Length: 223
Image (cartoon, rainbow, N blue to C red; front, side, top):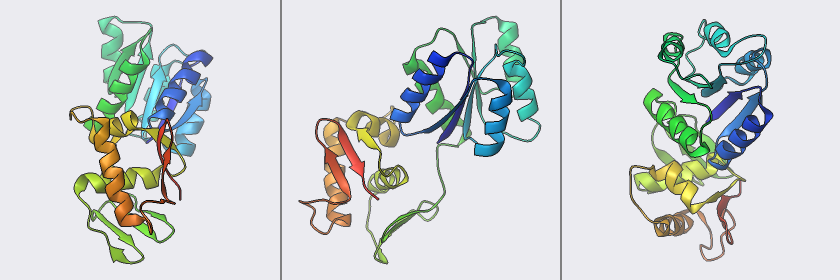
């Protein structure tokens, strides 16, 4: 997903961007409301993480302006925790509220929850990589015009890899992003599914050229 983080604290921008990028998201950052509005129009994010206490123009003011022509989900960040502030945020169309200081794990969980709840965690755009083509709307994948026989989980894992070609993902991240937190499976499950995918998309599965193992880290798809 494309996520825009608007906050005037450089440390928060840096750490949140790093965390969300490791989870497979494309992350944009802005230190002010003005830059945030510019990036909203330019990038059309799937989720906005917005600090309330911004200089010159508050996060609430920015949210009010954004809501005139956008329904992008918004998670507010604030040092305030009063009921009045939370009500104001929700009245402006906010989808969740995280109080500072917060843990990155909590924010990440809130991001997943909002994306699931708003339905923006289900991409519908077809992707291609060489002679491999994947269409999530028909839940179909083709290799050299041959339809691949994939289980729903194999399809989801392959689609995730191709959409994020070139990025390295740990087994834990893949479990979180593809299987979800509500399903208890071990990291061994990822290895098994990767092996199955290689049998379908690699010319020589024992010597993969597309779905690579990055020793000590995880896996990477090469487009």
